[in-house]
Image (cartoon, rainbow, N blue to C red):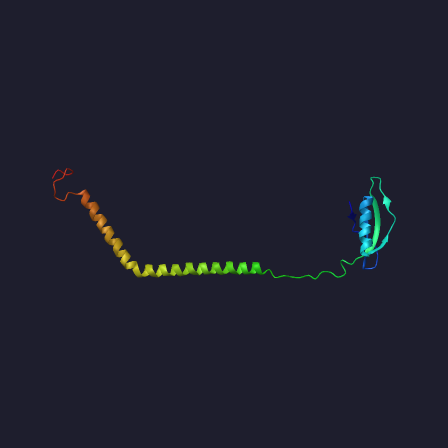
Length: 146
């Protein structure tokens, strides 16, 4: 297993120093990759551990990070458009509800006298019908024996 440690030693800014730890085959493969890419500057003697691992300190050119990647700040248009659409829909719905409420209020104001008149007529009819059932209208019935 190859593992790179992140400690730095004072070296020129274009080089990196790392310790490669792993089995002898893994360390040899890592050194071969650096050597073939032309980036290897220095490799010290391998140090053997009791568990069979090997540690080699290498210094190589840092060609992968010669310039930091530019920070691109992207406007999240999708979220802005979605928020605007939701806000517009909510405002439209509230405007529609307000318009309907105004129309209902005007209709009630215009038809209120007629509605009150109809309600009064229904109340008078209900009272007359209820009163008629309670009294005898002059016909012979079994309720009053008239």
